[in-house]
Image (cartoon, rainbow, N blue to C red; front, side, top):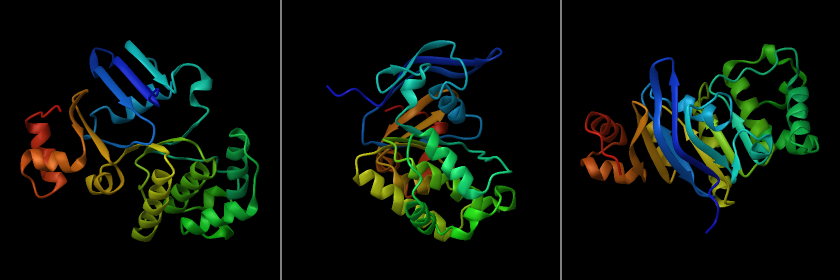
Length: 243
């Protein structure tokens, strides 16, 4: 049996006396595009921080590609874009991308970088501008460009559509569809359930530190007889529907 890309086994996390994650079991097979949904404070970002070893866990175990998440080697095939992406303000766009590629042990190719900027509707003139001059949308596109240029097997994107205009959102979805067709793996968080339904083949609803739904987005709508995923989500967190 193929080793899953990610495995959580009975993971628990508290902040002081407050439980944020409670006995989380999660397995993400290679090639799955998984959307993680939940209200503010549900624990989505904490789950990602635990996955990436940005914080300790109080119970359980997390493995990435069969390796304990505390070992740097576990994250070699992974690219991450945080919800609050803030690149070093003193670098130009080119310097930032070059640095990220160097960390990923990939060569800088000006033509590929310009093509990726074009794919994300990001003006190539931004390569020569300091990041501090970028708008919120430009900054987000820069982070996405760096992630995609690193060409990883597993992408962890925390609210990646933040600050993007409709055209850029559509272009990001085009890139993600291409990555899905290539067999890459995605863990996506989004407050836009429509984005999750369009991008992901599987979704999890995290509520009060536990998963209350696991399945295809369409299955959540069908379970509650809802015409929209938003209505189904609201019914799910009001009447947990683990499954």
